[in-house]
Length: 328
Image 1: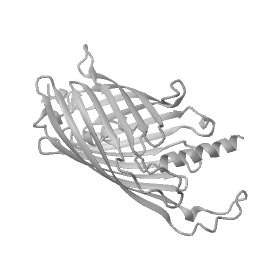
Image 2: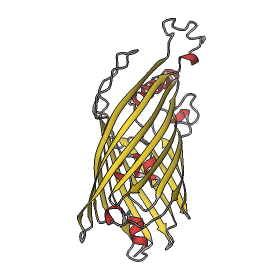
Image 3: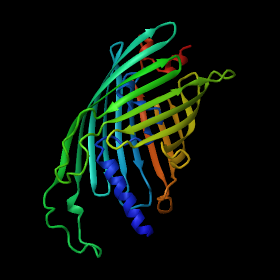
Image 4: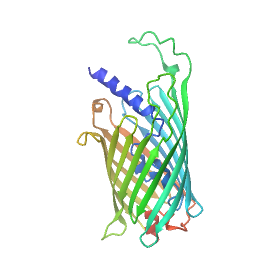
């Protein structure tokens, strides 16, 4: 019974994740890399920002999801930013690869009130493939289906769009991913042709009244898939300690749950990161809190990065909160 349950859960994971043709979102965005979520964050800050992320889900389960991604964004001109992200995702015998090109434009709504609005757009190219060369006979399935003889793959082109509103140290980002309908997978015929999903990310960066170099950042991330109504929410909290040179370290935690199961988290776990002289490192660990808990040791995510070519922004609308405070 347990073995059958495991197969069912893994099958559901492969269907629900691999078929999305979208970069999987776990907690990578909390590693000071909000560009993972939305193109609107491209070009906010004073550096060319590069981040590489490696994520291994459900360690201990053979064929469990494994993901690698690279992100880079920078400011161009006074009010705009560009970025690119690439990822490779492996889930059992399924493979996804993708690249995303992003553009953002940042506007100042109020200089005195520090209100800013950013608009972003991304063009995405994603490919999905089933590794039929790995299909071999087993004692349970002694004969491989003879009809599976060709390369089962497809490519999808799509767009993301969103906006980001900032007021002092409050931020609210709303993003629509996969706006266009995609071609139905010709070798299954069972999947939806709409992969549109909505993401909302909001938080508040608070400075300690006693120590101006200490920050507290509660945030929430909501995502909903339009095809079947699935939705989940992350509740996050980060503590950050800075110095006058722009270096800092932070610790935090995240709690993710399905929105119809508030008290039954999908996963929960700690995380931490450090920035030193432009070099960045972060690690997060997620405990699996569901029926797969007895089969794996959790999910691990590592982010490394570097900030290059620092230059003070000419417009406050392209200056991040930490960069702004650094010069006060």
